[in-house]
Length: 384
Image (cartoon, rainbow, N blue to C red):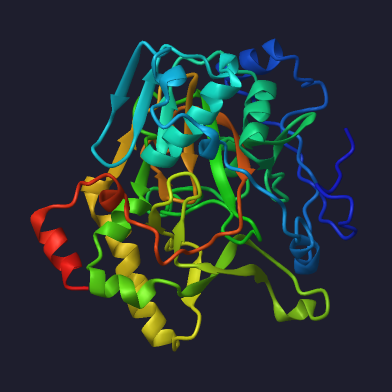
């Protein structure tokens, strides 16, 4: 399979690397069962774009997006009644569905799953018999599947990214003090014109100890702020950066530069209509209109609210053949590298892009919409 850029408009590309690592046994079994051609090596590594203008031009236009959750039955009867068990992992975030296969969901159940993800931020399904093809098809139901210009793909399935720490370590070795990679709080693809909505990660091989993933709720992080502080950030925008740098074609000697987009700090989810804090320490660069010192103080506080309130977070222990579907519009996440590469881990990820982020000053918080406000919160709001 000849390496190629992920988008035909990209002309100048870097040479691909050759990957020769041995796949974990469970991962190989899953891929072979799905009919994935491994004869030319695994994974497929597309050639990478060198210049920022090539990357800016990918999907650089407005696209319609209808969130499946907006079509769903609010009670989600078709989905929840079919499950053997529905387990809410914390009060604010995280739900596990037992007894359903993602590959068998009806369109009505997919709509209701979309709404459940929008409400609970991340939903888990264990013991899934799921091919990469079925995973991609489910992603396409939630929106346009993103094909990442920097990450390896399952051969023949652009948009099904490979998450394989052993492979990543061949480029940048992880260590106890600097685990790197996804081991930091972040949100996927914030630099896109229309950033990520639902991401679906299916792990077919996981370590027996460690390797948990954490998520934090953007709804709850926003609700942790006082009503007066919310006024400071409501309607403001920030510059969001890509995870990977590129060169300026007109001035390549200036060094690596990031893809940047301007988006709201607080956004509203189209399915729930609730406000969520939408910043992350890794990729939210600065608040537009403020001096750097002012921006740094405010963003630093917002990052801390998101990251340090453990009551608005969920920590999930993976088992083989488990899927997690989360909404990047209302969460940040962090992958723990505490297994230190001692056992294999491998998974495939599909990310559906969503709408252009928007803010609505009249939108409620989650606690307002669900009538969860305590006496002190009601008193604070009554003063506004």
